[in-house]
Length: 372
Image 1: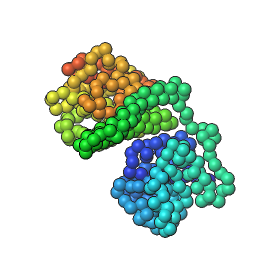
Image 2: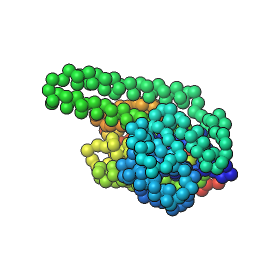
Image 3: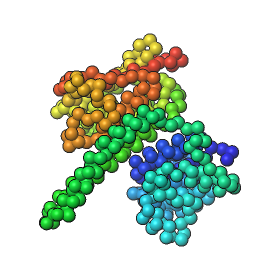
Image 4: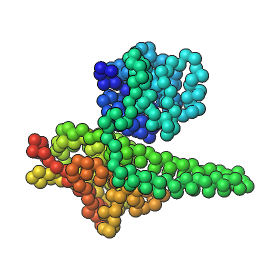
């Protein structure tokens, strides 16, 4: 191909979108990838340009897939369609003789891993290039180190084993249930375990997609990143009555997406681990010669001093999932992002007295902090 391929990924599943994007970015680093989680995003993407390939989930929460594909083909006849879904969803869609697709990818481990190669083959056929395929070894993409993968694998296998074992035990108990009420209770517990397993999967996918993607440093307006993070947390902020007090933040060299994830996790934690008072999160920044020191201070439940280092370990939890649901990955993600930007993160806290998370980041000579 003579230009970077434009790929439109349409999927209402956040976890599947994230994993697909991670694998596409890793295997096809030159591709331009646009994510469309809803109808408005699809319309905006098609308005901005004609994608070479549209990857369309076979099951969408907000649209009939056959109608959506027909609409894309009508508007952008040159766009190749790759149907992306679970076995039954794909089977039901492919029975429609009017559904024109250039490729099929199943949402299983083999399908996700083959996604980039299938897209490459579709692009090659579309452009009349025979036998063109791209392998991971040819792409020059970033690969996580052995230590990273060992840490991820251990945390994932340890945390994921427990809900899966519970599901097995509950299923056996359900077989022995003698009443409808007993069966219903077992079913509820199975669903709770399945949801926990799904949360762990989503958290691990987020961790991999953010920390293992190639970082391309550029000037990043941290105030704009904070605004994006707060927009993503708007529902939690409103429901909790949280008050966010933020100073003007500087511009530095970094990765915008990772900074948004960093701020979103820190503010989300401050809201989640709140005391009986309505949460107040104060965000400030201090310039120190060649460094910026950001502080995220809250009035929450606080953290025992002996745990202020351990909370940054992957999968580390100080509370039960019943008390505070989540994957236990957020602060490990924050630490990895900060370290990838050449900085460090730490916490100062006392139990019952709130917490302050400090983020120290390098300040390049060419970047000047804006006055508060």
